[in-house]
Length: 195
Image (cartoon, rainbow, N blue to C red; front, top):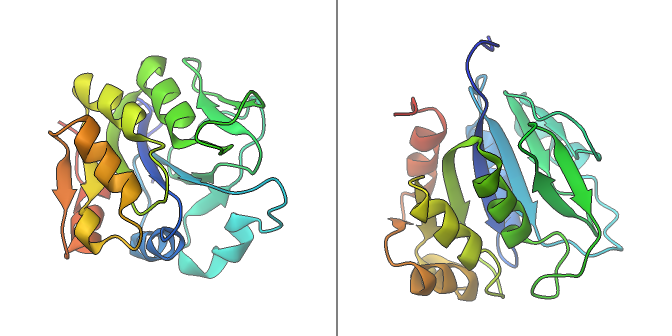
């Protein structure tokens, strides 16, 4: 059961080409309530017709949403960035949808979400990057790591598309590298106590 007295914590998860299946597998790991909010950012075009919470409904019992402008960020909830907007995290623990220029030809972009979360003052329990065909997210991960939060990058050699995780490692060499036991590691991270 959620303890409303505990401060909000975020887990940020981003990816692009090759990450959809990874996101699906992560959701299957969530078999009990979470002490944090999880934000998934997947590159999706304006014409994307899929509502990810409906698509993934059978994968977990944890509540899933595509947040709207000014929605509060809640613990024990999974959020998916909506198509054609950057998903920003505000210091007031609310979401902001932003229609400004695309980053790396993408909206939503990982950097927009990750950088806004880093600047929000909300505790980031973990930030993760997986397979993708652009360098989006590398700067956001660097900023998060430099603020003392834990960052994890899929080993590029096992990523379906290595460019995104490789760029994150090249931009900041101190991320923890997720290996072949990636899902076992992720489950441990998600259900660990923050220190």
